[in-house]
Image (cartoon, rainbow, N blue to C red):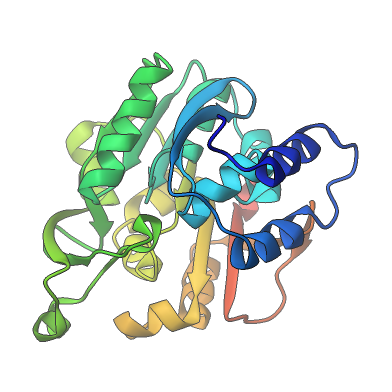
Length: 283
């Protein structure tokens, strides 16, 4: 812990204990860009009770350390949405923030995590083992529209690594690897899952592919969805936020976004957002 700068420790202390969190994200962002973040690993707690080992120069890890949670308002909404017996799918789990939270708060349910990046998957597995979580299954696979193999372009920020369409195979660099891909419909059928209650999808632009490969579970199970949309990343797949919004509405979902800590109806296309899709029959 002594390797962590005082300013990071103070920011974490404030984030975890101050009655008001307004402005902490902007402060953390400014400090990340203008002060030196040491290239060290540190074990700390996520949500006060879950142990994680963080690599501080990575933006997501830095957030978890300094603010207690990455995307804190969304993470808290995620927690509030979990029933104790929920079946949760974490698509693009990275090192497991949402996986660990789901395992903690859906203690009598089942959590299934997908993460294709080899190093991130190893860290995810280590976190599951470190916290002695028996209700988690983790798969080193990507999720898309169907089964197959796709190139995963690796990034220095491991959480930003992204699938690449086969049509762009000629653009792949030495920093790309082939990874196994499945679809949610095929996976759920093969595994015989009795239900799916919540699905979090954050796959750096391939969210539309994941949803198109989940038609059966969206119709049959109507899970609550948390879906990242990012216009620039989706363009790689010939996709866009508008098509994802139209798809979700076709499946009978009402769409919302978080404004600060409050949920608000989603009313216009944006370039980037975390969509909260709630089945209308559950409203």
